[in-house]
Image 1 (cartoon, rainbow, N blue to C red):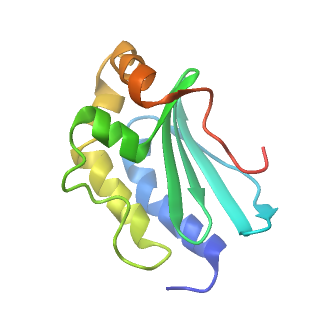
Image 2 (image 1 turned 180 degrees about the vertical axis):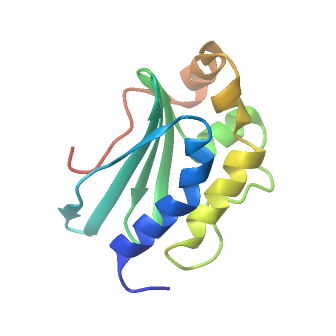
Length: 140
């Protein structure tokens, strides 16, 4: 585990960039946000009204999928798709960067519906397993 969390966060984004760039998603990195529990680093991959929001505190802790005004956390989405068993994220390793490779594995093998199926499928699942509103970005 490296000691610089911002470097870990940026290295993690580099792991994910080729996947999202291949799907024409852009990247927005938010300014670090200092809170009582530490400094949060956040980023969002976006394409049209689709967004994948990442929040890193000590490691990659939160991944939220959004289409328009509905969103679902990664694990809730896996549950809704019935593909949670054997998922790689969250990573079992106790370091600040392994979560990004684990998320990439899930993106490539389990999360295809978000990128390829009609938006209404996601919205219907989110109505049961998700929430209304945009993903929370610390400090925004």
